[in-house]
Length: 83
Image (cartoon, rainbow, N blue to C red; front, side, top):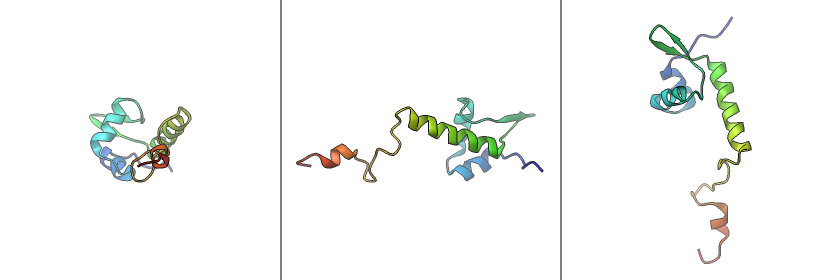
């Protein structure tokens, strides 16, 4: 049996982001959605695949993910003398 479709609110809660962020990502075409009547719905599996692919694309394209230290400074700034 196929899983039920998720609302904007449910997807936002699942991903830990705001509903506005989900709507923005939908408008940009970053996550797939279905318009049924006037309601926007998401297939949870399709959203998960899209987010995983976007993360892989970001890392493969030289994105900044993973290059920052927990204190917000870049690793090079951590090693620079006199700081």
